[in-house]
Length: 98
Image (cartoon, rainbow, N blue to C red; front, side, top):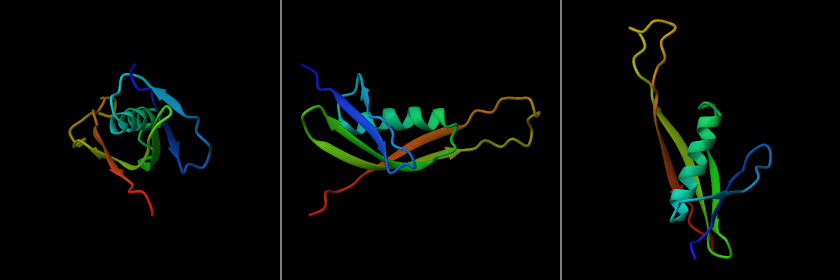
């Protein structure tokens, strides 16, 4: 049976419900999927935070994350032209305290 990964954004102003992340094979992939969706939904307004990921009935990991964007040169564009922003999510696993 495939592992079921769950992820939850933590350390936010408001509590965020955990989400099941289908189609991933490890903690880091689950964290990346949730954060990528979140940053996209926020339009890049929130660019750092933390995410908790766990396997149903198993190990938990916490990652700090940051979204890094490469903004294109817009000086030659008209105001109504769409720009494409390249982005990358950088995950850093927190080591357990103890």
